[in-house]
Image: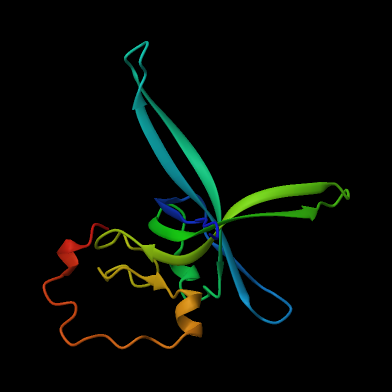
Length: 155
């Protein structure tokens, strides 16, 4: 029997800085940003509430269309996978980094909170999944999504 593994990350948090987009030599857009997620718990000994913030670096390939909307403080949903890689810094020392390679990025929030040039829109903005662009869309059955509205989606 073949072994199975899962490498799946889901984050909902706030952007720590404006996204930065650069282009590879082959003109492929690479957008990088950080997401802050918070964890809150009650300390068993003191009974006090404690909170910690975790910062996660995210890389989004071919996200030049959504990048202008990824500004500091905006709440986003990120789905992707963990990737650890190494590189040599300017002193020649090997540096290891772990980041989330995003497959889906959705801006969350209501009117005026969704961000970007069109702040009056209530529609979440999404970066297309790279898998979807490569594969043709599967046909759906007529009325397959009936009964499921925007209010049924948890984010």
